[in-house]
Structures are given as C-alpha cells and as structure tokens.
Figure 1 (cartoon, one colour):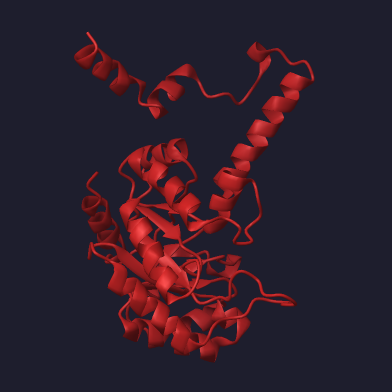
Figure 2 (cartoon, helix red, strand yellow):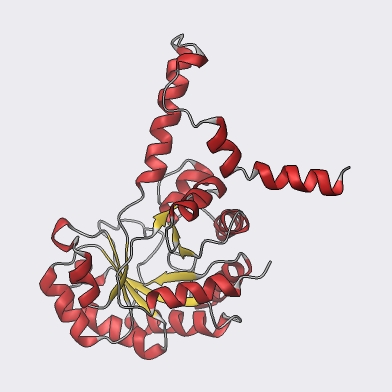
Length: 285
C-alpha cells in the first residue's frame, strides 16, 4: 500500500494555523468511523494498544511487534492519517531506529518518541526521564531511520511535570535543534507554562492530557499547538457497551430487546459490505 499521501495530509494539517483534536482509534472499525465522521487524523495510543491487544494496563508489556501489527490493521482499513504513541522507542537509540522502521512500514503518518525511563525501574516511586543527551540521541536515531521523509517524527516529553518547566524547555529546544518535526508535551501544563514554551520553540506543538484551563482551541492555536488530545474515551465506551450487552444477554434480555446496537445499515457501511459485494460480482461470477 502507498502511505505517502496520508503522511502529506498529516503534515498539511500541522502546518496550518488551527489546533485540531484527533480521533482516538483502536482497530479497523473505529478508524473507519473516525474517518467517516470527518476527523483530520487518528490517534493510536500506547495505552490503548495495550488495552486492545493484551487487555493489560499501560506498563510497557506490549511489544513493538504487537503494536506495529495493530497499527497496520488500522491503516489498511482506510485512509485516515494515523499518529501513534511509540513510547520510548522500546529501548535505546538503536531500538528507536527499529521502531521507526516497523511503524513506517505499518503505514503510520506520525509517531512520538519520548524521553521517559520505561519500563518502570525497580524501586521507582514516580516517573523519571533520561538525560537530555540520551534523549537527543534517540531523536537523531529516529530521524536517521526514517526513509519516507513525509513521515512526521515528534519529540515527546513529560519533563515539565517531572523535572520542572525550565528543564522541560531545555529538552524541547534540544529536540527541536536535533531536527524533529514537532514537539509533544504530555500533561501537567498551565497557561503560563504553555506561554513560556511557545515563546521558546518554533516548530508545531502537540499536547496530551489537556486540563480544563487549556481546553480553548483558539488559545491553543495562538500558541502554536496544532494537535491536542482529548483522551481515549471511545475505547472505554466500547468496553462499557460490550459489558452491558453481554450482561443483559446473560441476565435474560432477548436479543430483540437490546438497546444501543448498531443498525444493519451502519454495520454494512463500516464493514464496507458494498465494496465486497462489488468485488464478488466482478471477480467471482
């Protein structure tokens, strides 16, 4: 499959002047729904990968191979540009290179590499970050491993909420100087923090874990933020719907009396039944 078009569309989105919220997706159907509704980009988080593939919490027990395979399933289902959370690159800078190669092959439009120490070390009480020098090495390795230059490499850090704003800005500027295409800050920012960061860096910003104080797209746009995550509620909603439906059936509710069930028309649309019918008629008759 040819992935460059969606990567170019992703780049066009973050090159604009507006902040957008991505659609949180976790499988082929959710990605098709997000594309149909009109989301500019999809977001596949590491935590959601662990939930959907392993049914496990976000503790870096999911492997790169498993994550890349699910990303590929999402990508082949449609044409929505997909941004993924590649965690710490699954190891050191050499592992980061392998991560970029696998995810580029899987068709992602953009990926983040973060500087958090992962998985959690023995006796660690709270998250810690690697040195700036090692972080820069990871960013440089990611850029070197990329073959399709349309693929967006994003440097990610949680350092403002871990080591303080000054260190966070220092890291963001170092990753910008290393050549990444954008910067992602995870959690813990105030407006004054974002103002200070926006004054120091020139490439697009992205935010995760946005507080109520920052849920203002006009303000975010004015500070260079081009992507702001809203969380990953669709997966939780799917879990709740599945639980409620199975429990209702177990408790004796008749299938015809169930509520919240997708119509046959919706199921046909999101499974691309019409395409398969056309192909059947064209190639099997």
